[in-house]
Amino acid sequence: MATHAEAIGKVANGRGAVVQSDSLAHLGIGTLQTLDLKRARHCYESYFGLECVEYAPGRMLCRDRRSKYLMEQGRRNFFVLDVHETDEIAVTQGMTNHWGFSVAGEDEVRHAREAAVERQEELGFAVIHPALNIHGSYSFYMYDVDGNWWEVEYRKGSTNDLFFSRGDWNSDSYCKHEVVEPELTIAHTECEVLGDEAFMTHGTTSVIDCQASRPFYEDVLGLRTVTHVRPSHCFAGGGDFGVIGVSAGEKKILDQSPSNRFVLLVDDDEQLEKQHERVIASRGEYGLLSVSDIDESDLGGRGFLLRTRDRIWFEVASTPRASLVEIFDGAGA
Image 1: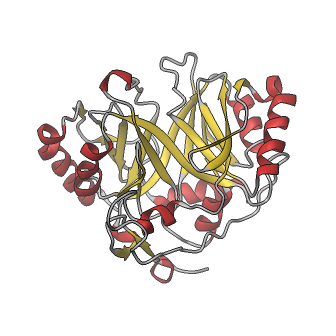
Image 2: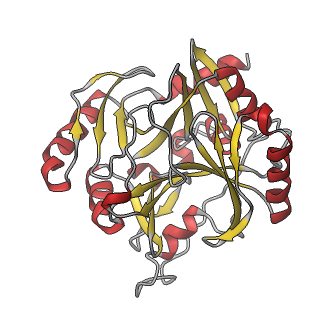
């Protein structure tokens, strides 16, 4: 197995520079809720091809094929979902708050939609939209009974790393940067619907103003950003999973719950405390709505919550990466 030191790659930062991937923050976890963990697990495994492990009562970790490969190779920038079972979904998501999967072609998109329609009640999909050519890909959206949105798309060769390599859309630097395309090897998981090349590429959220939020993501949180199309930007850590922020204007921003948040992983409590100080110092400049004290994190280690002006919740946590890997390793033992 490759050691972390051997596996560090180079990525484009969206600003015309090539950097070491581990110089950026690790966007490591996304959280969501379900009313029925058993039903959600069946859907996530059989339809999306996620590997799921119930690691505590009412709690489940899920990884896609890309993150399975990264974890098995001792790599750092994996992304997993942490699913919480609850009696009530207080805040449902809008379409601009969805999780996206990439598949290998338009036929696979059509097949995935047909399967969703045929098995709609079994899988827990409440709404299934038609497949369309939109934002440079061929895709369709689904809304589940837990208030979560999902997208299955064929990206026609585009990747998040290509977005960052090309630089900001419609700027003088667009397509003039060095193109960096790190390998995108994925592992195998059993799946009844999505094909062998399918994996999770992105989450999305709405923002008031894409350009106004970029300095906070870059300078405070340590992420990389790029305006890949006119109304939206992508932010990511050192890995290939990214979050698309869609400009919506202040009146159309949806409230979010801290149960739906993105988690940045830091190496230890010392880094956590320094990051907490940076966030506190930037609160007024970037209009942060709240910043919590450091406390115990749900997944181990310590952490703190912050809520941005765009009502997006983040957690910064010192949860040991090895402990997340061990959850999956233990399930297969």
